[in-house]
Structures are given as structure tokens and as C-alpha cells.
Length: 379
Image (cartoon, rainbow, N blue to C red; front, top):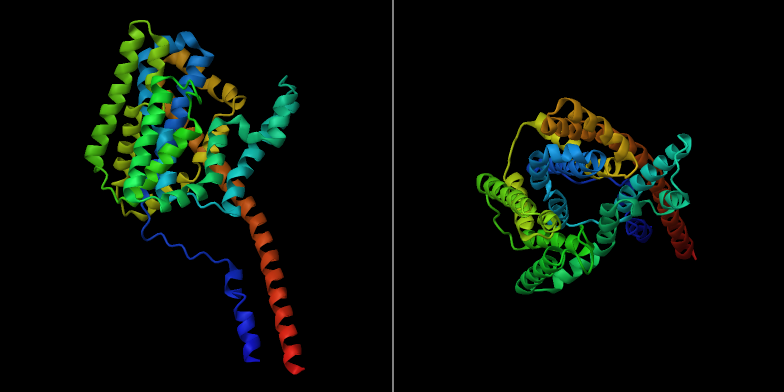
């Protein structure tokens, strides 16, 4: 009988309850606040390009300095997002994967059905992408999905490398991406946010974590961030002023070394922010989980045409581009957060139902093993 009990115990039935042991005592709420800031920066940055510049080019020229300034301030947002992912490490498991891929299908299919309802002429390829490969609609989603699948192997490489070798790898990636993406304007593997840029920022985040680098405090970090923003702004403005628009645009490149330093400085600024007000902590955590959903909703090329048209008209009629863009970004964050909470609730119900079925199957297997063991002992 004792051996039978040990047999059931070896099945780790206590794990079947799937209770989370995670605590938030050591949580860095400054980084949660950073995620909210990144969400606002991403929406604002996309608004200047896909909203004002795409929908009303003369308006972009009218508020050229404001648009350039907003773009410069928002430029490091995506870099920081991948840096945070590398700092904490992506936990690649089935649950995380489902939470990553499910919103893409939900929004992709939802927009496709909306196109049918409103009789929009979008073509068959759009429906194929929306129903089968929705992640291809968003470059960010495609890059992050690849990084998600590769993260396990990246960490194996990091663990094999010594501190010096990891440092050399980071320097090599910086040089490679600077030359390819910044100096050669993405000639070989794109001038947008490529998978190599994602690997660079992810590796940089892992390096900061591993080397226990003491990043600059909030004042120094904030100062460096503002200086880098000014350099990106001035560099692009001066170059475009003399008629070299294509060259000026690369100053807003993700692989611009100034933008990379700008990203590290922004990370440093928020990492050093500490606050103990529980209400503020809860509000920060509540809104910090909606970065992906906000991006998916606001950067779908069909949704953004509708989403940005109204605030662009407001700027055209009344002015106030900076405040209008900021309010638009905040409203997008609020709507996306509510969407994310509702979607997470339904997804968690589905996941828990699968877990309960899995736990029941494990229990039956253990009981079956126990009964078999008892019959064998009786013989």
C-alpha cells in the first residue's frame, strides 16, 4: 500500500491544480509604466506617418516641425519593447504562444468580416492572410513571432557564451545592424525593424540583465534620452533642409546608433522610477498588458485609415497637432485595454477548461497505475 501511495505521489498531482506561485513583491512598476509609455509612443509615432503624412500630406508639411519632433521622441519605442523582452526573457510555452497568436487571428478575421459586411473591395489575398496567416499583416507581429520561437535557442547560445563572448556578440550585432540598416539604408535585409534588429535589442536586454549593468538613473537617463531625441530631430531636419529627404529619413532608422542609445536611456529612466502607492500600482499593471493589442488594433492597414481620419480632420480644422495626437493615443490605449481584458477573460476560460481536462486525464492515469500496482502486489 505504501508503495502505491508513493506511486501516486510521483505523478505530482499537486501540480494539477495549476496554482500560480508568482508574487509581485519584487515587481518593478516603473517598467510597467514604461510599457504604457511605449504604447502611447508607438500610436503617436504611427499617427504622424500613417495618419497625418499618408492621409493629408499638405497638413504634414504645415506642421512639419511638430511632426518631426513627435517622430524623434517616439522613435526608440519598438527598440525598447524588444529590449524589455530580452531583459526578462521570453517564456516560450503553449499558453504564452496562444496569448500571442490568438489576438492576431481574432483581429485579422474580425477586420476581414467587417470588410465583407461593408462591401469593401480588398481582394482574395487579403482574406487568405486574414484567415490563415494574419500575422503577416503586421511586420511587428511577424518579427516577434519569429523571435518568440527562436528565444529558447538564443538563451542556449547566451548560456554557452562567456561574459566576454556575449559582449563581443552584442558589439558585433550593433556594428552589423548599423552598417546594414543605417548606413546602407537596409539594402540587404530591409530598413524597417528586421529580425536582426529584434535579435540585437533582445540580446542587449539579456546582456544588461546578465552583466548586472547599473543603468543611469532617472535624471541621467532622461537627460540622455532628450539629447538623443534632439540629435535625431536635428539630424533629420538639417539633412532634409538641404534637399536630401531620403538620407534624412534614415535618421529615424531603428538601427541608428543614436536611437539605440536613446532606447537604453528610456529604459534606464523608467527602470529607476519607484512608487509604492498601491492604487497607482494596480492602475499601472492594468494598462501595461495591452501593448500588443493596441498595436494590432491601431496598425492594421485597413483599421488605421478609419481610425486616424477623424483626428486628422480635427487637426486640419482646429490645429493643436500635439495635443490631438496625445489624446488619440490615450483613447486608443483605453479602448485596447478594455478589449484585451475581455479577450483575456474568454481565452483564460478556454485555457482553464483544457487544463482541467488535462488534470483529470493525469489523475485517471495515476489511479490506473495505482490499481495495477495493487493487483500486482496481491498476486
